[in-house]
Image (cartoon, rainbow, N blue to C red; front, top):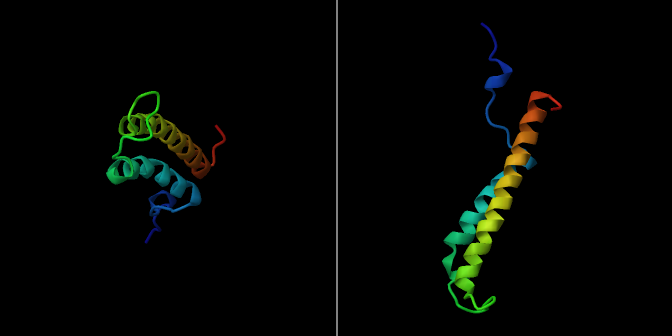
Length: 84
């Protein structure tokens, strides 16, 4: 019988992949934990905390998603053995 090809191995948990997962999960946790931001103070330039906190997470989520994508690309290149 032939052996299974190397490419069909199961998922590998590496520190980089854990960081990727944390980057993608953090915005969900922050937005689902409503009790942490369901208040009006402190206001920022007249905008209640509830609103500016959510808007800040739009920018933070963008940065975290971009970071996760770049880390994923680097991880895939390293697994293929390429240096692109």
